[in-house]
Amino acid sequence: MTLLTTPSGATPSTALLTDHYELTMLRAALRSKTAFRRSVFELFPRRLPEGRRYGVVAGVGRALDAIQAFRFDETVLNYLLEQNVIDTDAADWLGRYKFKGNIWGYPEGEMYFPGSPLLIVEGTFAEACILETLLLSIYNYDCAVASAASRMTAMAADRPCIEMGSRRANEYAAVAAARAAYIAGFASTSNLQAGHRYGIPTTGTAAHSFTLLHDTEEEAFKAQLKALGKGTTLLVDTYDIEEAVRTGVRLTKGKLGAIRLDSGDLAEQAADVRRLLDSLGATSTRIIVTSDLDEYQIAALRSAPVDGFGVGTSLVTGSGAPTCGFVYKLVARSATEGKDAELLPVAKKSVNKTSIGGRKFALRRLNAKGRAEAEVIGIGTPPKGDHNDRSILVPLVAKGKFVGREPLEAARERHHRVRAELPQAALKMSKGEPALPTILLDGDGHAANNPYAR
Image 1 (tube, rainbow, N blue to C red):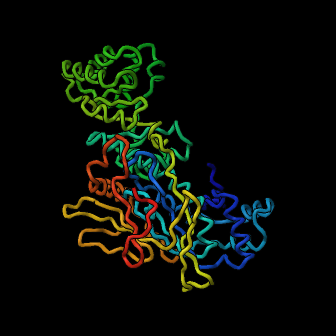
Image 2 (image 1 turned 30 degrees about the horizontal axis):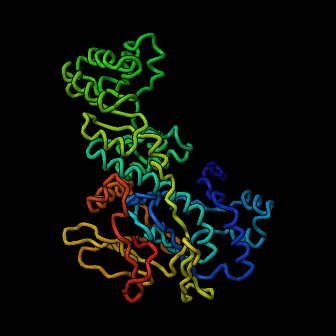
Image 3 (image 1 turned 90 degrees about the horizontal axis):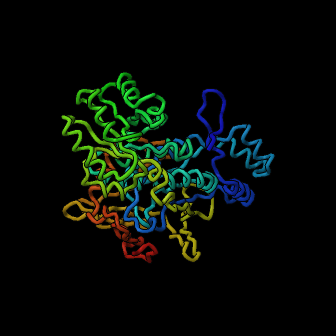
């Protein structure tokens, strides 16, 4: 994914990170005089990935940045005109494009379930329609990574997880993955761009090639310790693990920070290495494991003497669910132009691809103990809750002003808190139904036909 460059010092444009038909729809709507009808779009999942019990929201901050950078300069407009994607009327309008509507959404770190209205975009048809591909590409990937990361950190409990999947993803996706994983509880990343851009702690020491570079493993360890200090992590499975551990402990006089295991039966090796370290007096030396881990392997290692997990491929590919299947649908529109024009519900009736007309509102129903019981979606009007139920949607853009940005730490704290609200069954790794049922209520507060029901 290559971002367009703009004049020196400007933010890279996201204008062409979209599909051809977004702009041909705009072109046709301008011709039919319907482009400026008041409209409401909704980004939502019809279902969770098979067997998953919950999903995690991520990508909100990236989406806001992308919308703000959605601008069409002369070079981009000329390209679109040359390719006959747009005509001169569309080019004139796009040249002045700036989103001036309203957006509400689930905040980052929040949980979602089938039918959750993760994003509500209100504006003219023209300004809201052309954001579809950009928003879906961000949300579908970031939420997939965050959802996988949440399952992994839940299984790791209080032991840190390190994101190290950069080499298994597109170079830009790698940065997004590190951000999403951090929201869902990962402690650090190996990706320096993510550290620089988002302030995520970075970590890393050495690969097998560094050991192979030297004439002996001891020489390699000495060089690493001299450069990085006794608190570093030594990779001990290039040759013989036991000999490497003994060498590392001897060179640091029992003060070695950590060792890393990257192959073989990690549970058995961790137990053997822990006994060896303790027998050598290195009782404070930690054991970090890597090697194609996922949430199931982390769960299997919960009783092993492991102090941290490095996760790569499975994390950045969503651990078997690389996309969330989100869609972006028009759910209401006016019959005339004007910001006060009455909104009329509209919906798709396609088999297995239905949408529900009307602007949505979301409520998380909690019981007396603060445990989540249901995802309640109101159609047209907000659903009513009691003293401890909470509304989920928050304002992100208000009349074109970006009001929903927040520190990454706030999203990270929210995820930890909201995950703790879920029923205990939500954290099972076996396949199951969504942890919360989705309840749809019409404008009168009555149960509505629910395609998301379990």
